[in-house]
Image 1 (tube, protein in one colour):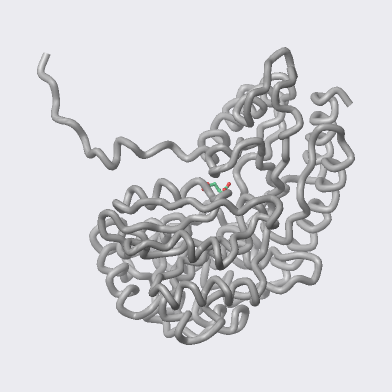
Image 2 (tube, rainbow, N blue to C red; image 1 turned 90 degrees about the vertical axis):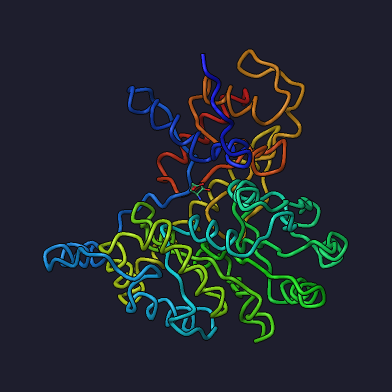
Length: 399
Ligand code: GLU
């Protein structure tokens, strides 16, 4: 038999996304009629608001179904620039906005455009799983620095400074963070940004959860800290989480003009622009009434309070109180070496598997997020499911 030549070395090392993998498994189990509760992919369980759906239907009926410029329709790029000014107090021209097929795609494109082979990217752990592989897909080298529980899962300026080498190109921030839910305040961001200024680093700031911040805490975009920081920052955001539009696939970057131009060129040879209909729906999301966002935020807060209390009332597990996003990290440190559901628990992968098989609850092990002994649970799930899931956890733990 003829042996075929090897496929791309970079591509063959790419791991499947753990979040999407476990979500697909959960959905397969559900489709088979198994009574499983899912806390897997972080996507609002709310429907996309009616005004947004109606805008999409109008677009179809008015035959707005043709190609658009690769970086998105001008009205969407303007709507994004306007929202960044209103919500985050940062000025961008529409030309500095590049629309892509979801925030994940924006991250991918930005990394492809920023990195040369061997460039180092500083990535605080726990991190959202995709950053790690997307860096490598662009030929970059992830340099992981720990954001420890003791430091509220945040890195310090000293840690950042210590990790910088002659090859460092970029710092990735995710604020508020998936999976930790922690929020860097303006003061902490300023300290990190100063290190980036001193060492001439870019900052990619994924702010996709910016509207979901609780307890009166205030979200600050790192780009809002000054012109000098803005020019080295690439903001990543999208409509998926804020407007319950995960399936519409609209993400965007806001960056310097040159970077935006190159990203647009890159898109023009790869995916082109996302679906025209989704772009028109996103214009309505950004320009239309915002009340649904605040309703969702209030609901997430109620669920966060419930799930955090339930977890911390149980024996053997605990979690920190997240400032934002819609995830909690369940700490299972104390259960390592114990037997649960008839299996020895050696790490969080073991726990997630046994909890799914015997407890019938699907969660995401945080090993894919660069930390062991934790599981990520999303509270973008109905209160009914959260209550049932917590009851099952308590039972599983023998409480
Ligand atoms: N970002 C969400 C999550 O972390 C959606 C799934 C994904 O794309 O990873 O669950």
